[in-house]
Image (spheres, rainbow, N blue to C red):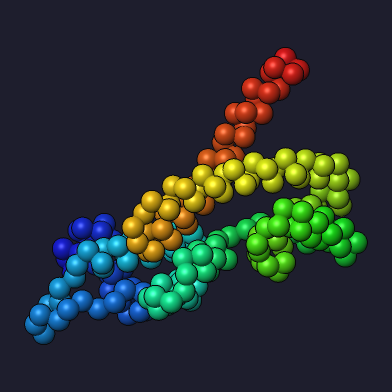
Length: 205
């Protein structure tokens, strides 16, 4: 276990906790107090850390993702969906009228683009919250750019999946997708700020 801890960078106490919680399969017992761990354990530790520490998933959500992976029956798309459902999204309390207006806009967007996602998906609810809040603040005109944002989101999603499709295992794909989504969000915010500064200078400066 000490070698596994050193190889993975995960403290021994944390490794033991993951073993107790069933997030990490037990090693091959070699003696009463010794077990052998291999590269599969290192990969699983990396995935668990990505889901818990980077993605912010709960223990139960991580177990659900791991169970789907270990079943070997769930397609990668389904496993990625489970992981994405656990990723935090901003929520908003909005009035019924604003919510209904926003839900109509989102429903139209999904239909026009033929996006394959459930209407009650967390990301759909988050988008409804954002649009509804804009309307409640008197800035529903900003929803006019929704299609341009969706165009950009499609290109970013293709780039994201191109980068993970080259990976060899489902575990590495899920890990990279979770890390890429969380840090990709931060990357996108920073790039947007820089692009806005440049566009502002050229248009108004």
